[in-house]
Length: 260
Image (tube, rainbow, N blue to C red):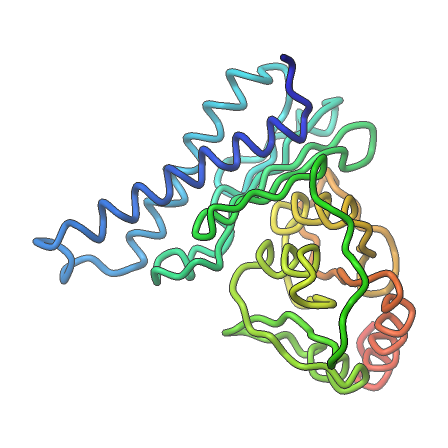
């Protein structure tokens, strides 16, 4: 049976996630060297190992397609390609190195000017969400709104949005985990401003859109992928009914702060 692009993305993300779990397990079990090896080294090894596995799988399954990856050199050839895989082999290196579960593997496909498939693996939870099978978000229950936020570096935009929505902050790790949390109904929104790249959001945004969520830049403009410059510094992912209010709060905050 021929797999869809989303199903392929899910399989590849899961395999890379397993490589990362196996590597961390072996690293932790090497007690003789444990005191001499900082977590940063585990992160470097994880980045390299997951990149190698995804590169191998993409070369085997889609040899004619281009690739944009955080962990590989970029090429102008992808600008002429009809299909481009946008991957983040390890989203949340810090969380991975610390032994936490809130890190992810991203695999997305851009074709014809749009994201057409994506998968986010959260290996610590044995979970893969893909754009073919992710369910639509249901109606939210009672209680305050919940806003996903970085556990270590909340961006400046967080507080005005939190205050305007009267929301609870829910700290968590990687960008992919935060966006997946919106798609899973664990939180209602995620807002980021201050620096990301296309690989940080492509796969989770593909999943979020498939789940029926709003996804855009913080000024409401479209998220554009496979652009020449991979920098894509901000985004909003939220329940559709919250989008107008959230974007309005961001616009007010940017005006107040003099941010263009």
